[in-house]
Image (spheres, rainbow, N blue to C red):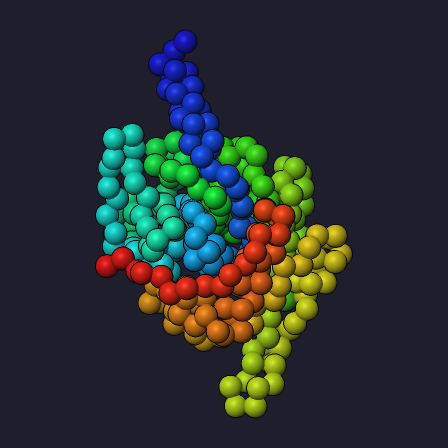
Length: 287
C-alpha cells in the first residue's frame, strides 16, 4: 500500500471512529443563497442545546463561513488537544467548527477546488474532538454541488435533510432541486422550512406578505415531503445575528422564536419518536 493509500485509509478510520459518537446527522440545505439557511441552522442548534442535548454545528460553507459571526465566536481561537482540535463552544451543549476559524483575515477568500473542500469536510470530522453528540447539524452552502456531495459521502448515513426556502417562485424552483438531490442520494427529507413568510406590522398587527406566503407549504405538498413551518420576517433576527445571539435566545417569546421552536419539535419527533420539548433557556455565553 502506498503512503497516499495508507493516509487515506487512516483518515477513513478516524472518521468512522468519530461518527460512532454522533447519534444523528442533519443537513441544512437550500437551492439558492439568501434564504436564511444559516439562521435556521443556528437557531435549531441553539434550541436543541438548550434542551440539554449535545448539539454540534459543522459549518460546511467553505467559501462563506458565517456561522461563527452569527454565534458571536468569530474571534475564538482553535485549541489543539491530544488527538486533534477542540471545537468552539458558543455556549453549553453546543459545539461548532468552521473554516472561519482557520483563514485569519475574514476578507481573505478561500480559493479551492472540489478535492480540497472534500478534504476539509473530512477533517472537520476526523480531526475534531466532537465527543458524544446527540445531533450534528451541517450548514451547507446553497445548491447541490461539491460540499453537499462531500458531506453525504463523508457522513454516509445522514438521518435527513431540511430544505430552507422563501416564498418566491425562483426560490421554490431551486428548493425542489434540493429535495430531488436528497432523494437521489437516499437521504430522507425531514421537511421544508418557509423563511421570510410574511411580516407582522408592529402598528396594526396585520400580516403583510412582503415575499408572498404559502409557497414553501405548497412546494412541500407537491413534492410529498413534510412542511416544518413558516418563519415570519422580524428585524430582531438581523439584530440578534449581528450581536451573535440566536433569536430563540435573544427574543424567546417572539413569533419567530416560536416558529423555530416548532421546527425543533418536529425534528425531535422525527429523530427521537416524539421526545418531549421543554422550551429554551438563556445560555451562558462564553466571553
